[in-house]
Image (tube, rainbow, N blue to C red):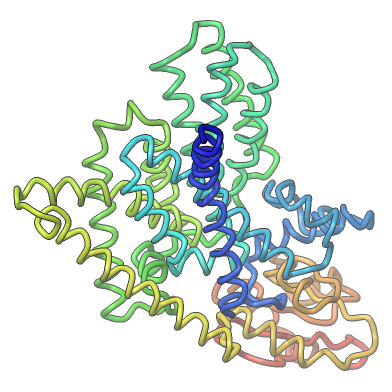
Amino acid sequence: MTWIGSAARSATSIAERYWGYAVLAAWGGVVLASGVLRFDPFGIEEPAARALLLAWSVGERVQSTIFVLGLPDLRALLFAPLAAYWPGSIIAAKVYMLLAIACAAALLYRRSREEDGAETALLATGLLLISPITVLEADVLGAGPFLLLSFTVGSWLDRRYRTAQRPLGGWYFTQLLWLMIATSLHPAAMAYPAALAWEWKIQPVNRKNQRQMLIGIVATLAFVLAMRLGWPALDWLANPITSLSRALIGGDSSLDAASWVTGSVALAALMAIGIGERRRLASSLMRRMMVLGLVLGLACADGAWAMLAVAALLYLGIPRLLRFNQSLGSEGFAGNRGITMAALVIVLIVFTRADKAHHFAVAQNHLPPVDALMLRFAAEIEDVDQDVLTMTQWPGKAMLALRRPALPLPPDYPDADTLIAHIKGVNYLLFDPKRNAGLAKTLAERTDVFQTMMVEEGGVAVHIRSVTAAQ
C-alpha cells in the first residue's frame, strides 16, 4: 500500500503545481468566447499597429515597413511568433496578447506569494485578470501587458544572473536585451533600468560585476533612446484621472462626475501606497519598479500606465488593506476580513459591470473617435479601383484598416503650393486638425485642390484633386 500512498501524494503535488496554469487557460478561453475582443483591424493602438506591421512584413519577406513608418518599439521582436506562423491574423495577435497577460499574471502571483503571502497573491491576480483595463489592453494590443511582463521577467533575470555569478555571461546579455525591449515600450519602463541600477548600487555581487552591470545599463539606454528618439506615437500629457477611471470602471475618455470621483480616489490611493511603500523599496526590486514606473510614466498616462497603476493598487494595496483590517483587533472572520471582503466584492461588481459594458460596445461596433473615422473612410474608398495613397497621422492604423498603402503626414510647408509640389501622387489626407493646426491652415489656402470629405470627432478626411482638374 506504500506505493499507492506515494502515487497519491505525487498526483496531489502535480495538481497543486499546475492548477494555476489550468485556471489561466480557462480564463483565456472564457475571454475569447465571451465576445469582449474585436477580431477586425479596428481599435488597435498606433504603436502596436506599427510593431505588428513590421513583424508581419519581415515574416513575409517583403519590403519592410520600417522605411515608411520608422522604427517601432521593440514589441516587434515579441511579435516574432506571429510573423512566423500567423502573418496577417488579428485573431492570433489577440490570443498572443492573452498569453502575454497570463505569463505576467503567473509571475506576479509567484512574486506576491513570496513577499506578501498566498492570500494577497490570489486576490490580486484574480482581480487583475478580470479588470477592465486588462481586457482593453488585450483588445488594442497595448503595451500594458508587456510592461508588467518586462518588470516581472526583469526581476527574475536579475536573480538568475546573481546566482550564476558569471561576469559577461549569457544571463548578463539576456538582461540587457530584455532591458532594451522594455525601455522602447513606454516611459514608465524607465523604472526597470533605474530600479536595476539602484539594486546593483546597494547590493552588488562584487565590484567588478557592479561596474559591468552599471555600464551595460547606461550603454543600453543610450542606444535605445538614440535609435528611437524617445517614444513617438504615444498619447502624451493624457489626464491620469481619466485614464484611471477608464481602467477601473470602463467607458470612454469623457470625464463625468462618476469618472472624476473614481479617478481621483484611485490617484489618491496610489499616492498613499507610494508613500507607504517607500521604506520597502530598498528590499524589493519589483516594488521599486512599480512605484518608479508610476512616477516616470505620469507624463504619458495612457492605457499602459493605467494597467501598471491597477496592478500597483492590487498587489501593493491589498496587503495594506489586510493589515489594516487585522489591526482593528476584532475576532472571527468578519472581524479580521470583513472590511477587506466588502471592498473586494464592490471592486468585483464594478469590474464585471465594466466588462459587460465593453462586451456591449463591441457587439454594437462602438469605436473610439479615431477608429470610427477610419471605419467610415475605409467604407468611402472601398469601391475605388485605382491605387490609393493616403498620408495620415496614424499610418499604422490606416494600413491595417484600409489594407492599402499609407504614409506619415508631410511636414509643415510654408504655403499650399509647396505642399502640393511635395505630395504628388497622394490621394487623401487623414488627420486631427486640432493637433495639426499648421497643416489645416495650409490646406485652407487651396480649397480648389483640397476638398474635405468628412469631418468626425476623431479627425477629418481630405481628398486631394489634381491641380489640372482643379484649374
